[in-house]
Length: 157
Image 1 (cartoon, one colour):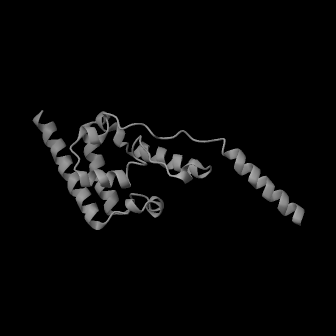
Image 2 (cartoon, helix red, strand yellow):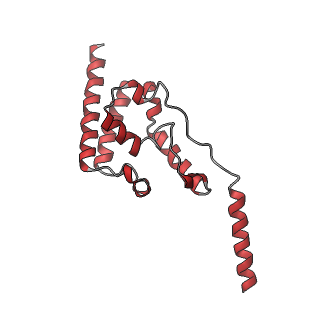
Image 3 (tube, one colour):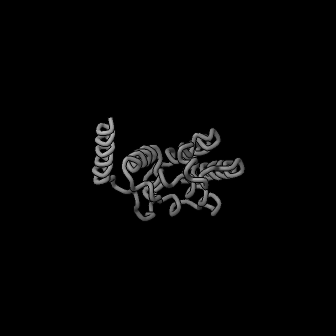
């Protein structure tokens, strides 16, 4: 029994070491001119909310913690980032049409009000991502205002 247990532990350790050589590509570009921060007027409080609660998964710029470099956690994080960016990528804001932007702004408010975003697993590890009711209201006010501005600008063109 001890031999089997020892063999299993050594095998698991070897597998763990080997999988460290299979790292994912990191999501760490600089903030580009296409980023929402460079395309829209974003107040500092909203900038902080987006940075703390959204941008790690919804932009091309992720702040990685130490555990994000250890497989298989790094694989799960990469999957979350890829999925998040496929839904919304703030780094590609300039490339979206006006209707897509307005829809996204409405969804941001809805998802945060429902507390389905940021994900509960992300909030558990990142305390700054836990949005208070006041922060959610500020974010919704801003998204509504920006959507109205975008629509007014489009109507004026």
